[in-house]
Image 1: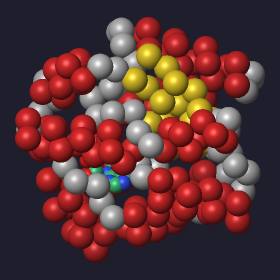
Image 2: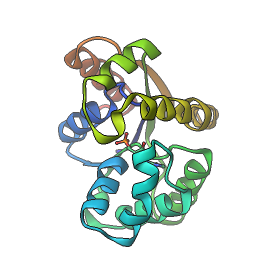
Image 3: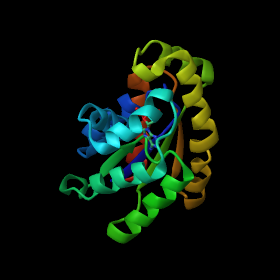
Image 4: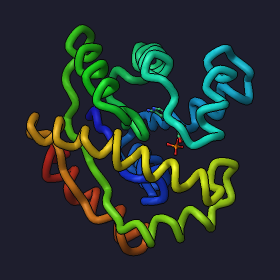
Length: 187
Ligand code: AMP
């Protein structure tokens, strides 16, 4: 299966993505984690993107598409993958489709997790990551609404979008996602 998870910061996307990838036996590709690792390793992409990440801004599409393209070319992605945090812009969504058209089958499903803004701010404030400071949180939520939310229309038109409620306990959300994925691709 080739799945994309999208959702605003704080919706629990990372936690759910890691758990679902394990459940499905596919690799979990979090572009946020990839960027944090690249920054820690001081690679050129990591150093260049650090300023954007720390300010809560989106890293430019060219850097992100190159990073994901390289990662998807690795052997462990052949049986499937779960992309968490990519694509985040329409440009990235279109670049991903082009990439897949050249190399492998299209996406199986795009799962969007939703939650209300008060709930998101509350969850983020409790996390304590470098980019979880209040002013950076506002910036990240704003980028989500302006740049990432529009890609849901793109995937809806392709008939690949499934919108799910991200509210409730982590177990409840996981069960909700699993049920939907089982309907899309019974195993
Ligand atoms: P995340 O861990 O998914 O919340 O990502 C943390 C930060 O990494 C984001 O606030 C962005 O600065 C950057 N980032 C992660 N994925 C992307 C992406 N697909 N496009 C642009 N920036 C990204």
